[in-house]
Image (cartoon, rainbow, N blue to C red; front, side, top):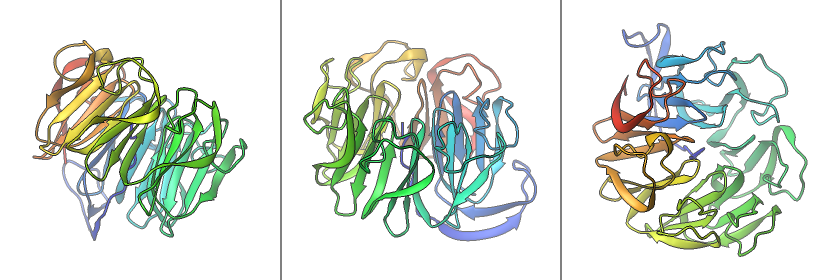
Length: 367
């Protein structure tokens, strides 16, 4: 779940206007459309910089000053260039590089001590990359420094301690991007991968099953992207190969097996992007086809079944980007239409209902 990293290059072309499909008094910008999926909710970033949400909102994860769920997409805020969610916490990056946050904050993972539930709050500035994880968050600032906030129970901060922090603290230098799941995966500016945190299943890929790794350890080189889930990790190298480590009990590696691994093993090639769900993995190949392996609870594969696959199978084509929640999936096609499948019990597919969908369905939101 890329509980996933969303680092977007933007064109700062702001104008003030109003449109029939949006709320009034919004500042529009030009940005790259993006998606984020948390625990039973979905966030869609439009090309005009407006952010929209559907699904569960019990922790105020929409940031719309309510805790009311919505089974249709509702406007949240404007001037957004990136968004990240995990469970019920939401991080939002605006076009002035300020970080805003809302939702679950029990461990201080939003980077501030107190706030009104459901209130979108400005946290810090000079931010270029964001990642929301399991009760902790990682951000990268414009000087390539890595900052962490929230729970540090298993050493997720990688700073040699298990002390949590209700504010963002600086933990590493020379970082280009990071992924917060139930552990931390970090890519440095030289393309090397570093990892810290919970490692019971070997998800750090450091050749051990040490339960808690408190200091960042170098794992490999030539890495361009990472995605950390609850108990497994996948890595995209610069040559387009995909590597996986950690828990594989549901065949989330896509290697036609169920054997865990404490080292990264190659599981695919010819890949342009990666994404992890709860206990499944998704890859987009260079030809824009979407492939998935692992658990298929609630029909998150979108292929008309709830049957899981032990190896990667193709489920869609013409795919630009994908976001995987615990049990639901959204993706954007090359024509900028948004499609979704899987669990819909809180209306997270935004279709006005609460019936799960096992087939990818076009969602009622335009980018």
